[in-house]
Every structure is written in C-alpha cells, then in structure tokens.
Image 1: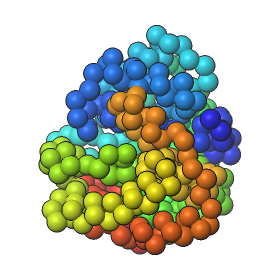
Image 2: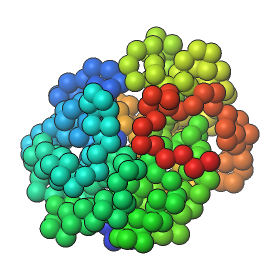
Image 3: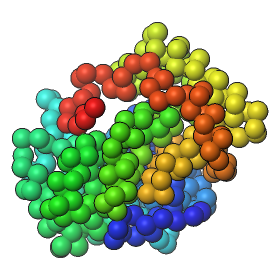
Length: 325
C-alpha cells in the first residue's frame, strides 16, 4: 500500500490507517481471536498505522493490539493512542500532566511497548492553559515515551496556537461524506502547517459500509445516542445513501472503498482510519477507485455537503469537542 509521512517529522504510514475502537465492543461483541485475525488481515493488506485509545473497551483494544504485537512481532507498525477522557461519573476531560503521564504508562503496559509513535489528547480541557498541555506532551516526546503528539476534535484556532508552541504530528477529527465540517478550515490549516489530518469514522459509523445498516442494528449502544441514527433521521439518511450505493454499484465499485477514495482526494495529508472487528470487512476497503473531477462532482450531487439529517453527536456527547462554525 502507498505510504505518506505522518506530519512533517513523523514516520511513513500507509495512506489508510486502521481504527481499533471496535475491538472494545462499542459496535457489538467481539473476541480476541477475531480481533487478532483482523489485525493479521490488516498487516497482510499493507496497513501499518493502528489507532487506538485507553478508553476503547477500558483498555481492551490496547490489550488486544499488545497481544498481536507480541505474538506476531510485525515490522514497521506505527501505533497511535489517546488519553484525557475520564468516564467518571461524572464524565470529564483531564489534560493534566499527572493524568496524561499515568494514562500513557498504562497504555504502554497494555501495548507491550516502550513508546508510541503518536499520542493524542483525546479532547481538550478548556480550563487548562494550552501551553501547559503542549509542554507536557513535549516533555513526553523529549524523554522518548512518544514520537510526537496529536490533538483530537479541535478547531483550527487551537491547531494554530498549539503549533506555535510545538508542532503536532496530526489532528484527528471526524470527516466523511456525511461529516464535512473539516472542509471549513481544518483540512486547509493542516495542509498549510504540514500536519496530517487523520479522519476518524470515515465510513460514517457503518452507514457507508458494503451492506446497509438495519434499524435493529442501531437501536442499542453508541449509535442509538446519535441523532443521525434515530427516527426519522435514520430513514432519511439511509434513503439518501442508497442513491450513492446504486451509483457505486453501476461502476462495480465497493461503497466503502469509494467513500475512502473520496476522502483521500481531499488532500495527500488526509489519512482515513476506517475500523472493523472482522477481517472480511477490511477486504472491502482496499481496492480504491480512481476518482476524477467528473466522478467527484457526481458524488457531490448525490451526497452534497450537509445532506445528513441530524447532528453527529447528541448534546450529552459534546464534552470537550470544539465547534467552529
């Protein structure tokens, strides 16, 4: 698989990464054997960039990845993890040096490594001065615990301020055909500053998968709390995406691969990190079609910016997320 540099000073990573949130059970039950098989398929496909977090299954995702690293000993794997969300109760954001250092040590133990290539603050704690937070991350980099740092769910102004203190390797925000906010400044600012834009949920939490989601699949768990997956929005969104499915089918293209190709066309610094817990699903991503201006224009007609009915999060899920438009 083609590679790209992570930020201006990071390692080379595959142009598609792998999001490992599903290993924690957030989208349904899984087990270690299934997750290990999925990581094997990922590695065979040439994907070397794995994204996880301390809260994904309360450490389960990191533990599975650590088991895979120890048993397979793959070469050239780049690991990113995150910390700062404290589930509580009450749920809160903690960017303090003590918290970030302690959580990083826990992540390193679960992963079975001495350092991670990329360490994000999962959300920004707005009451804490940004220079203090970036100073903590720079210190972790200087002592060799992390290769570099990233910021998640932030606004362009935070990126500019953080970059002036010490440049990050990456920003990770949601970006897909139905979540287009990053086009209003963040994708452009990352390109200007030489920062990778890591697009999470690039397949719209399953809505842009190879098989349409059924209503019963989104009635429980994480998606049930997102307005886009509740009635009547879910039906409206499914109907609109069905037109995109038909367009892809007419060309013999996989729906997820086409959605990922569209994201890659947003800039060479844009790295989508689709996720799955099943190896067979991963195969559906890999044959990215070549999208020219005509194809991108047709997609824009079918799924224009702002087509999705409902917000991407419920109000109770917005803690720490920076909105800028």
